[in-house]
Each structure stands twice: as C-alpha cells, then as structure tokens.
Amino acid sequence: MLRAVGLLLFLMLPTLSFAQSCSFSTSNMNFGAVDTLSGIQVNSTATINVNCTGTPLQRILLCPNLAAGSGGASSAAARQMLSGANPFNYQLYADSARSVIWGSYSWAYAARSPAFALTLSALGNGSGTITVYGAVLGSQPAATTGTYLSNFSGTHAPFRYRYTTNSNCNAASGTSATTSFSVNASVAANCLVAVQNIDFGTKGVLNANVDATGSVTATCTPGTTYTISLNGGTTNSAPTARKMSRGSATVTYGLYKDVDRSQPWGDATTPGSTVAGTGNGAAQVLTVYGRVPPQDTPNPGTYTDTVVVTLTY
Image (cartoon, rainbow, N blue to C red; front, side, top):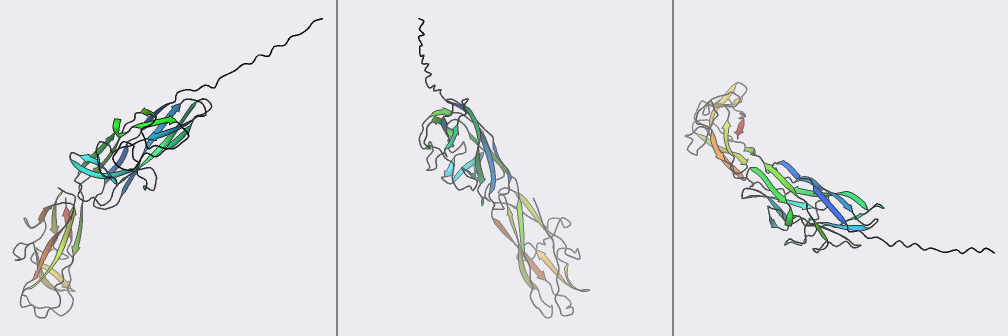
C-alpha cells in the first residue's frame, strides 16, 4: 500500500523595518519692493518640498524648525532682515491668517515649529509640500532705502524628522536634515505730500499787508532728498505777483519761504525759489507764508487761486 506523507512548510516573513530618510528643499521668500510709507503689511510665501523613504505605510513626523535667521530677531513678534546694519521687521507664520508664529526648539522665544505628518506609501515613499507664510510688518516709515536680506541654513533651519505617532516638535528629537533659503525685500525712495490751504480771511480796503499761512507736509523715506516747488497759480504769475481772481477782477498776493516774507517760494522758473529737504521717515511740515500787499481794492466778493505743489525726489 502506498501512503502519502504530507509535510506542512511554514514560511515566515518577518516584518521589515527601514530607516527613514527625508530630504527638503525650500524656495526663497521674496517680498519685492515694499512701500514703507503706506503703513500696510506686505505678505509673501515660501514652499518647503519634502521627499521621504522608509518603512511602507509608516507615519513620519516632520519638524521644520525655523529660528531667527541671519538677520536676527528684535522680539518674539519680529524677525529682521538687514541692509548693512539697518533692520527691517518681518515675521514667519504657520497659517495663512498669519496669527501663529513659526518658531524652533532652538531659539529664545516661545514659538515652536508646527508639526507635519507624512505617511509613506506601500512602496515606502512619500512626498509633499509645506507653505511658510511671511509678512513684512506695517508702520515702518523709518526703514532706510536699500535691499534687505536674511538667510536660513544650518542652525537657523534645523529640520528634523522621525517615526512617531505623536505630534510634538518641542524638542531636538529625530534625524536632522538640511535646507537653505533666503527672505528678501527692497525699500525704494518714496515721498508723500499733503497741503493746508491759505485763507486770508475777510478784509475791507486793502491798504495794509494782509498775512496768513498754510503748509506743505513732506513725508519721505530716510535719506531721500527732495525739492518742493509752487507754480505761478492759475495766472502763471511770478511768486510775489500771483493773482486770486473773481471773474476778471484780481487780488495780487505772494508766497514766501520765511516769516519775514523776503524769500519768494516759486518753481524752477525763478532760480533759488524752491525749498529742499531730506526725509527722515516722519512728516516734515513746511510753512508757506502768504501776503496780500497794499493795492487798489477790487469789487467785494470771494477771490481764489489754485497753486500746484510739486515734490521732486
């Protein structure tokens, strides 16, 4: 009799575990030209590209720590870019609302890196992108003109990653990785101008000087030189012979740079009559001294003129 003997062969395949490996590349954050006189916050973004390999279906915790950057930080709220020794405040955030500051376990302030998770595929690989949100803080009129820069690499960007099920990036835990990028902006020369009108009031007979003042306010970026000229009004007259009009009737008046009314304020057609200055980021108020000299009194009524103020920088 033939007998068959069957053998059961148990094949055991142990669970394999592979060391994780992640690489990062980060785009530069460019704020472009920033108008520091507007007082408006300027936003920009950078993108972190992530590629990882390791044990299939495992979860990798990513901690892209960002410290102060080469420009440093003046406070917990403000990182800095530098142009030479001149600072320019900005900040990096983890959210599009720019309310959660992006920090690092390695810097002096409370903010820490946000935590990101990447689950590897059945083939043991995975990739993704992470957005860094940036903002140049508003209300920095004292920033000087120039190109500003802060670099992130090495200790300023200690990226770390590890297999874990938690989401804690508060410590220097995991494998370290490298990336580098820059944050940059430029501040160009800029000026704003505002005026206060001159009102000579109500007068009867014009048999004595009638004086009044107005102003031109120049707000320019620090170090920006400027020149302010006043044209000849609607009649294109000389600085001390401008005309306020009511129909065909006129009243002669002059505009001056000094309280004694001895230095006419005009434009390039009258050499030496313009006013020059250098901006400091603050509003600089320049008084315009007006005078109606004695003259034949025209018919009663309201007399007006329009003078164009030109600020050149």
